[in-house]
Length: 114
Length: 113
Image (cartoon, chains in turn brown, green):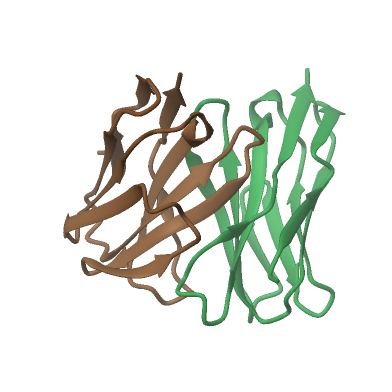
């Protein structure tokens, strides 16, 4: 049973294209997150949704647009892809936004922009 | 600015050795700290979550400690095995930050047989 799943696992695309990454969790959590891991393996939060409402929006280009159709899904759409967008994108979830709660991570989506 | 730092970036030890990984943070208003393991090309596996009210947490051969006053956490691995080879990440949650994790850069551990 996969707790937090992401599709696709690998994504190779050209500059200027638009692409989406999907995330689903079956843990019954109501808070979901997107993190980006750069080439130096540094992980940084991008967005967080609680009950389909955006609660964290870090300094991310507006080419990135998260969408949460329901509590179990948080998708990431990226417009006009750039070389610098190449990274591994991780989805995570937790039960609520209270800081005491553990986050569970998906396997990651490795995006390569050529 | 709230930051999390891990030193060293890489560590190599012989099998069987006990070792300590270090994590430091700049803000003592920490809510909790989570240690993760990341294998090459894989996602993050949560190892231990230690709350600010706790001083340590244990799981098997792993023991995590937290000292808010000094801004430090350590992950102790006893009797290391080659299967422990991975990158270890610490991540802190601070008050009034909506639950987001702030990550250190990670320590890449290699345990030699």
